[in-house]
Image 1: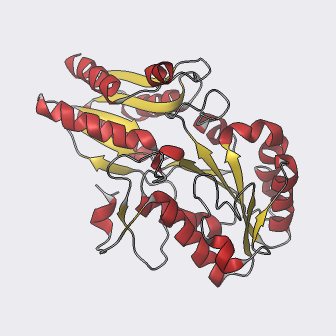
Image 2: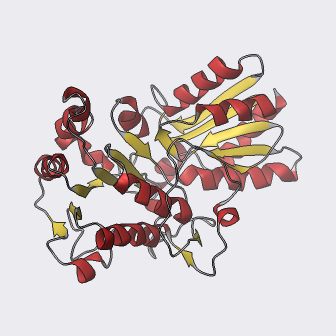
Image 3: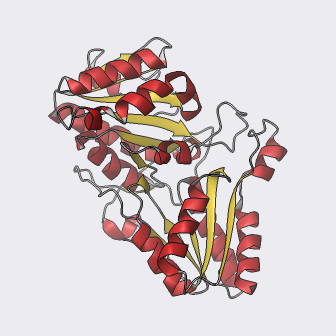
Length: 344
């Protein structure tokens, strides 16, 4: 565990999350001829959220391939390539689009290794943009963390900063199992959609990997634990600074990966603070918030004095900016929930 990415590396340069992703992909393309990238608008355009910017110029169209608008077709092609010994990186432009290729993801990517008795490896990285907070409405603003974490067979990664983004991308490409790599649009460092402070971090020039299943305590605290991931790590840290001004010390836990889930760190944090606030950009019911709370109850019930959760209500994500802001937990909402929790 680490308090911050900067504590892990001494580097004179900082990268945005998108550049960190691209740097890792480029290194793997240079050093492994079995790696290639495919998806919609990932070649000439460089990915609509800059997830592949610059790769076409260096590696050409045989390694960086635009595809027709047929998610079932190109994700199925990635699966076949992986079973034949290659290591494809395939982008699903928005996670919301998984509905048109659910069979390839749920019944094929996730299950082929098991159903073949381990004879077939499926080293596919399925990277996809998640999250809202910029008025893109109900079909382009979901995170669907719980949807992907629920099904056995796939690892699920959600980086919150550039250092993690690069290390997890290297690890995902080298893994023999399918990895769903979920990057939040608001963290990519785009000019038209600025990232919160703390996303851009020092990043080593050399390659490195990060282990799946190890959460990071981004801020220590004694009064309550805030467990979250992705964009909301930064909102939780901003809320924790405000809470400290009124004498409430909040510990902030960045889950980093959902599968495997670092239940040990969740339990240890709750044992330290006794109170738990789970913040999630996915829907409230049947999702991550319930899983984290169940983990705390099973592992630290005697220490757990109070619990609350903040998540998207069970409604389609609105297009109107005021309504979207209302349903997506913000810093003010986290502060109010934490203060109420601390007072219990």
